[in-house]
Image (tube, rainbow, N blue to C red; front, side, top):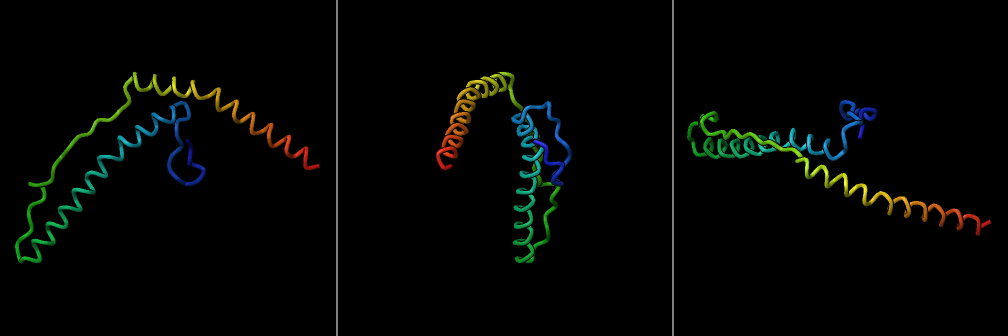
Length: 110
């Protein structure tokens, strides 16, 4: 998937399978989402403390750090490839049937 022409990021490496690109994107996005959620909770806590007249907490003492490793195992990649191979022929047959249907319908309409 390459959305670069639409101004949506850098050009993707087309030799990398789509599912690997999705896993890579998730691996890069999840820590940022977790951090944003933690910051939202800390902000709410700090606001409650300020409303109570209490001093703010030192966030470096309470901010959790976490490391997430995500990736596709070779077994998962093999299963995804096999699944794609198993569905390719039925999809091609279905697409051919649809094209034939519309061609025949168009010819009847003349």
